[in-house]
Image (cartoon, rainbow, N blue to C red; front, side, top):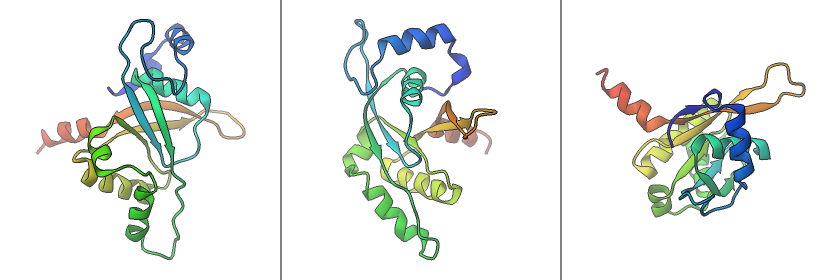
Length: 162
């Protein structure tokens, strides 16, 4: 999954890709080999349009979506609640290391930071994450898929600055 911006894809390309994709369908599309990923969502539920945008940007099918309700008790230590949150995904140690995963991180920055640290420990590398952005002028607030970020690539580039 390369880092790509939603602006990198033309409307015609989106329309054609949307016509070819069925969210959650795994397999081949018009003769091309398609890989499938698991989307682990620690945030608000994603809309059908957002899921199509994710598949378009990732150029991969979403095989499975794991919805994880993320709510921490403010008076309890976050690290204790973190392990329970990650375990709620139902993924095994092998799946964390071997599956194609895309993470939609929690909205609260402290929890998101802890989730990234925990996942790095379980996966052996930083995960690829989803970034949403608000749609200007929408009421109620609506969000669109902005980009898919490869955090491991960001880390590797940053290491060159040492």
